[in-house]
Amino acid sequence: MESINGRSNSGRPTGEGPGRSAGGGLNGRTFSRRWVLGAGATTLLTTGLTACGSDDGPGGGGSSIDAFVYGDDAVKVQQTAVERFNKSAASKSAKGTVKLVRIPGADYTSKLRTAMGSPSAPDVFFNWGGGSIRAYQEAKQLVDLTDTIAGDPVLKSGFLPAVLAAGALGGRNYGIPMRGMQPVILFYNKSLFAEHKLQPPTTWDQLQDINAKLKKAKITPFALGGADTWTELMWLEYLVDRIGGPEVFAKIQDGDASAWGDPAVLKAAERVKELIDDGAFGSKFSSVSYVNGGAPAVFAKGKAAMHLMGSWEYSTQLGKFPSFAKNSLGWCAFPTVEGGTGDIRNVVGNPTNYWSVNTRTGNKDAAIAFLKDCASETYAKALVANGDIPTTSNAAKLLDASPNPEFAKFQYEMVEKAPAFTLSWDQAVDADIATPMLTEINKLFVGKSSPGEFVSALKELK
Image (cartoon, rainbow, N blue to C red):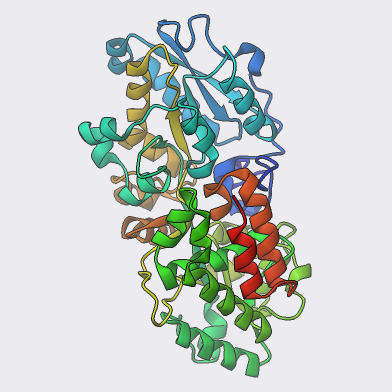
């Protein structure tokens, strides 16, 4: 599966490893819900685990360190970074070089898990932060980078604070951002809004008023690919944030199952049910898929006026419906909810991917020196050239070179100004919780459980 500039990118069905695909992309190429997870169907022929771990690998005190990376087409940015580092003064000072070990996307999660319990464990490895690394952190396999970041000017000022925090566990940093951002955005059809004299909503009351006017005009307010549960998850993520603030899910992410009982979760579920009962998603949303392009088509063809989706929706539309993308596609922040404590600037979605360091590394100095390159302007430029929006603090001035500067700048400023960036729930929690959580979300949307039953079921997830 290809994406921007030919990258192969994909989403992750929780509990199955990377591999959920979706949508279309720039220049007619397919794009996905979570490009940050790479392509589950990638056909890259890459180095397997039999070659992982140098002769003097983790704990061996040697100079060479191994870096496991998700083997999609976007890996060319990391490959170039490795080549640059190995020739640099920083490499000589740290007395170490890096060997990049590319693992095909469909195998990444399982092979990383196997390797971390073997002599072939990597020194540095690609991950998604949050729940994806919790088991390694609890097993004391991760270097706590909090003090290293705070004490190093390059790392401390090199990245957007919200992105650094989004990949943390318990307020401690175990990763350095190494790919681009993918916030969830409320997209709308500018032509339909102009025709019906509507403005993008900033409050929930405004949104409900817009819904009423659209339904009166026989237009479904929102496209929703309910056949893919992660599209439904986005609604709850934002509603819980807007009603209760980011602290609610932060408690859940840190393992407090009782936080599912926070009033904000119930209120969010009730808002969802109100939307469904009111026909805001139409009557057949549960049979519409995002993965096969169904929901984007409903949106682009004017059958629905809005679409809550990851920022890749722009690429999807430009690839499948270029005229709509160029002339009618608008974007804005998710609205506030009256009486809620969440800031309209808060963001949910995919902050980025991260490099983490194994505590068994034989050359921590080389690992840290390599990670610092991710904060460089050279690295950020390479991401921009690849169609990504860097999470570095120096990226704003580079975005004129992106495939769509206007949209790139909107995304960057959205994340830059965000007081909080909540990692997508199904990535933030442990896999054994994420799968039943998604099941309960789908039951809520298709009417198989009430908001109260939904909350009760989530509180049992431990």
